[in-house]
Length: 176
Image 1 (cartoon, rainbow, N blue to C red):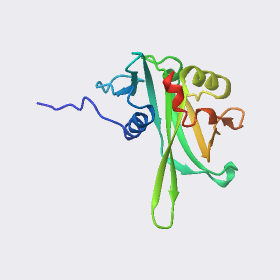
Image 2 (image 1 turned 90 degrees about the vertical axis):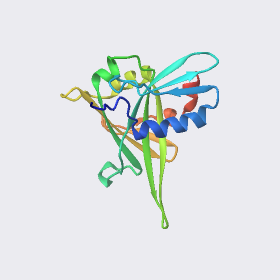
Image 3 (image 1 turned 60 degrees about the vertical axis):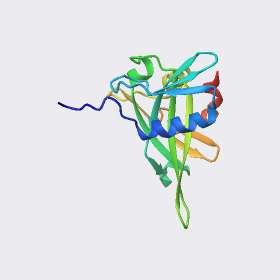
């Protein structure tokens, strides 16, 4: 008999779930789809009183320190997303949440902190359509750089910085 892994949890999904549970409080519950083949939905937030839910696509990335040539200081992440996951998802997505890890190397220890870009799907589609260029392979690339309480995207068609700061750690968007 073969044992099949029906459910596996991504590290970024687990970190996000722990953070959401703390930030949203006892009126919310979190659910993970058991079917590992379910496309586009990584997490569901359910409001116990209103009985409304939000589906979430979680995107994590390794963190790297920006290069001098990028002329911006900070920790960056790089995400590659299929075009269909944004514009024609298999299942309804309400939010994209990007998990960005910030590394702090202190003299005595190494500390890693997470930042979250909580972006409603309609905002994300609009920004992607207006500011990004689809690669020939059917993907969009995003590079987010976190600097203090600001975050910008630096990998776009106009070679400018797109300000995503209003989505940075904005857990209130999930409470609507």
